[in-house]
Image 1 (cartoon, one colour):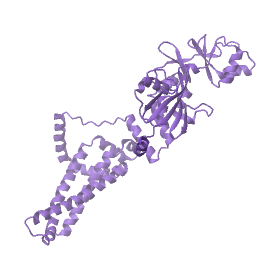
Image 2 (spheres, rainbow, N blue to C red; image 1 turned 120 degrees about the vertical axis):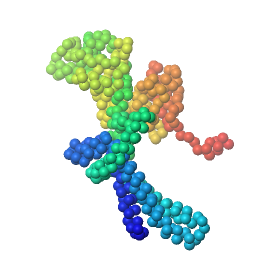
Image 3 (cartoon, helix red, strand yellow; image 1 turned 90 degrees about the horizontal axis):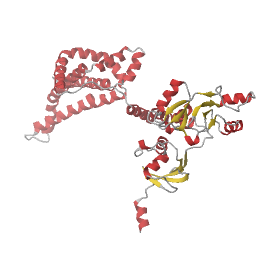
Image 4 (cartoon, rainbow, N blue to C red; image 1 turned 45 degrees about the vertical axis):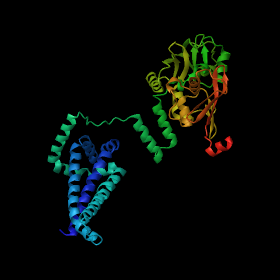
Length: 441
């Protein structure tokens, strides 16, 4: 055959190999979620791609048969077609015994480079750009190719399956989606601009509900405002005016003797109707939902959904009330500043780019978000920043006590009756070596 005919055949072989490489990567990389959406919308080809992914052995066997056959045939034709011309070129400069070897190497390099570039690298990169669209476009011709290669593919698959069983290799594909997979998709969406920063933060918070303990969002015991059965009317009015809560616990004498709760709306209705509220009774006291303090926020949300309640008392293992939590508290955890009342005291105040004033009761998850820290040391042993300080110092902290971790310095600023009220967190900025040397000198 002439050089022109050989070149035409090689171009056809490269095109065939490129098509197979494009198809192989597209079908392997096509995401099932997108394909299912297209199939549910009525695209039959998307369903065919899904079926092929479920039973991909015949396709991959046929693909490898085609790719290897084309590559070998292309190498044979290319070497025979180009070597004489390279030999003529080489003999103009060199006529020794290595001329044949050099011309063969040049011919082999040219053909191999053409196949790598046009039949492997470029098709695979194109397939990764839009695998779902490409897999749907090529599904019909590739099924015809699979039928043509099916007899030889069956033999090859039989041998491969025998070897897999012999070496006890599990060939079942795991399609379980983990939180890490979803998190990676969210990060990619945020980097691509599909998800806004705030939306990304919301989604992360939703998944963290399973990990965050009820302590991270509840109103703690010392901050719980409650009524007693014999609460004077003036005291009730004063608490309603001073604390804008919608629900209040009702206890016998102490907070640990919980009877139920009252809705502030019910009491205000009685006041507007000029009815006496000298004594709380069954008409106003409702049964309170009690939950253990070991629950996660996700489990608390399930309890609220099952009981149709939005308010619960949190009880520890000694049957003591450690706090109260509402549905609004959980929503604030998810939505953050978007639903936090403006007048509510902020737990994290950014002073400048390198320092923060933080309340000791701030949940550790909020600290990690604010400071950009992935993990705190042994964080399963505490829930708040105050707990972190006590765990690290192994004592009740005093003002000026500090801990350094993750490139930050955590310093106690204010302590009230052994309770850490405020901490100053500063970023540790390393000084340049030249400045350190000048100070030492």
